[in-house]
Image (cartoon, rainbow, N blue to C red; front, side, top):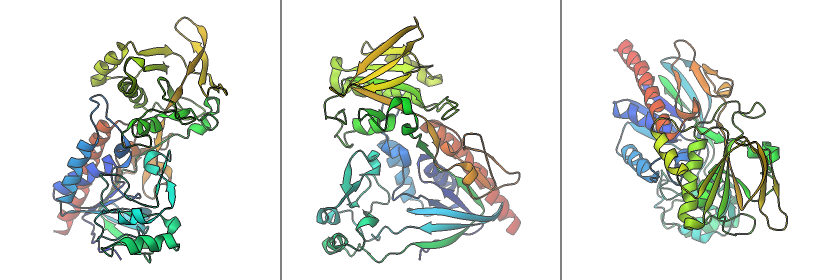
Amino acid sequence: MTDVIATNQTILVVGGGISGMTAALEAAECGKNVVLIEKNPTLGGRTALLYRYFPKLCHPTCGLEINLRRIKSNSRLRVLTLAEVTAIAGSRGDYTATVKLTPRYVNENCTACGACADAVTTLVDNPGNYNLNQMKAAYLPHAMAYPQRYVLDPSIIGTPEADLAKAACKYNAIELDMQEETIQLKAGAVIWATGWKPYDAAKIQPYGYDRFANVVTSVEFERLSDPHGPTAGKILRPSDGKEARNVAFIQCAGSRDENHLRHCSRICCMASLKQTSYVRESFGAGGKSTIYYIDIRAIDRFEDFYAKVLADPGVKFVKSKVAKIEEDQKTGDVMLHGVDTEGYHRYENRHDLAVLAIGMEPSVNAAEIPGEIIADSSGFIESSAVNSGLFGAGCATNALDVNRAVQSATAAALRAIQVVNKVARAEA
């Protein structure tokens, strides 16, 4: 049983991505007791799966490393991974959350030596690379994982593979008899920072994501470009491993569409502009990118970055909503069909690879969150009920880039602090 102690002056943060980490840290560094809950084995969320940020093209590891240092040094902040809130009861200043804890099968003795991974042979899909490759069933989610502990996939529990992992561990870190637990935590305020997920590209039937191997999503392309990704940073076509030197980036794939996501997902344009730089870095003058767009959303400080990409002779812009994608069965090339609205001529353009700038939707629909939450038409958290102590943060509230998600999380932390301060004054 976990030893977490929480009271009505504790702030509970649900979701351990960049927004949840920020909200938890801001509250803890203001002297509040905080419990941070994450359903996955490690903190970092989707930010940890990025290769680079826009517009500076720096690596996310720097920002994550700073946050992890802050977490490790703050005694007021307790982190629970593989944990999920299943119910919440009470009212502002006096909530009780029911939390399900999924077994990791590895305890705190783990030194991340990797002996357990060396001992097993079973492979499972790697969610850290959006299942583009496989990994050992005993694994460390990624190099910067926090906590820095291995995980055993449940599929090998009760098999000889699990016994091999246990026998290989010199530190008695493998506990094969770990069971699912349910605990209850008190909190004065709760911050929902449950993040976002990519829209299901298979629902966009004309683009053939589920039929054509060389149609991928923007989040998958991000991993393909990363040296720590499934192809060691080589931009290769999934169908045949050929270098993808001629890449099409299709904007608003699932966004701004009454049949899919009605809202603009905000980050897609900048993500594609950023990803053209990956093609250029990989292939130099031999790399070509074509961006098919309705409008380019590059506001404020992003305008200069857009202008830089616009001036690149290796990047072409086509103002068009791509009508459909077909596959050349002989070559595996993708054929994009549509009408260029600047000149109004039809095109049938051939590319090595098509990248769908996929839309953002909330990981947890706000209507399904247990508590006094009001959802908007897209499922994001619109607001809380009057006099509520439940607050949304980051991409749980809207489609946001990292910078704006952090700002949103800081605001949520301040609101939660106000609630527990009132509780403390009332009990003084």
